[in-house]
Image 1 (cartoon, rainbow, N blue to C red):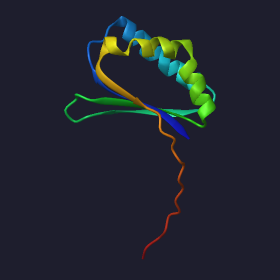
Image 2 (image 1 turned 30 degrees about the vertical axis):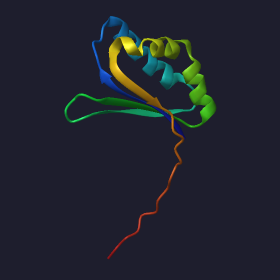
Image 3 (image 1 turned 180 degrees about the vertical axis):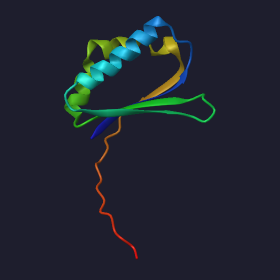
Image 4 (image 1 turned 90 degrees about the vertical axis):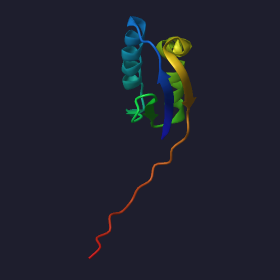
Length: 101
């Protein structure tokens, strides 16, 4: 499994941000191999994170090369006071439940 994570400090959003944010979510969901996403916000509300997951690197690359994603990526500095993107490879782990008596 592969993921792409955006950790950011929000700035000022506008209609363009809202449009591209919705479009990116739709593009991700329509990309083959898409497994889902999750979001996080710090207790103080200053830092946010969004993570998207794909079954393999080729499908993640398809998303990254999509014109809508590239448009949104080029606009990050416009809406975020600071941001960092990371793309770690995740290893799927499985566990077996054990009953303790």
